[in-house]
Length: 100
Image 1: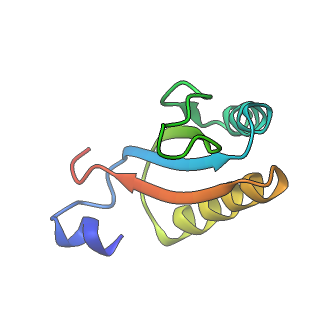
Image 2: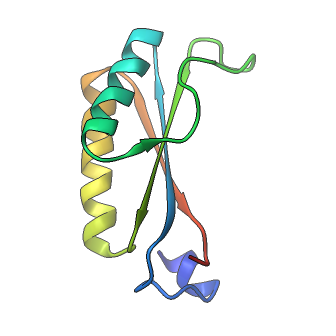
Image 3: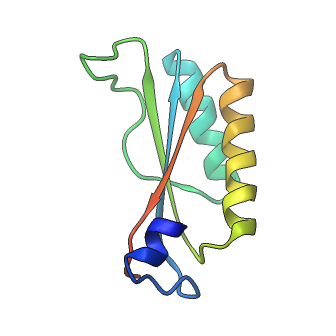
């Protein structure tokens, strides 16, 4: 949030937010994506195409339009940490546009 504020973002305006997760298998990635979608988060990129640098790590990228607040950061962090943990994956954080 500090970086957004420093970049001049008006945090009272909704903006595009992207969340990054990685799963150890295609099945785990698909399960994470399904649960995230069920919780209201859209899929940003196709699930199941690991990069050559990380062949055992299946990316799941989700998105939302939201007002960034401490509560939002805490709630989404808890949600994605839980999803990653239950599927033996990793939640790598989020990013948001400075302008809505």
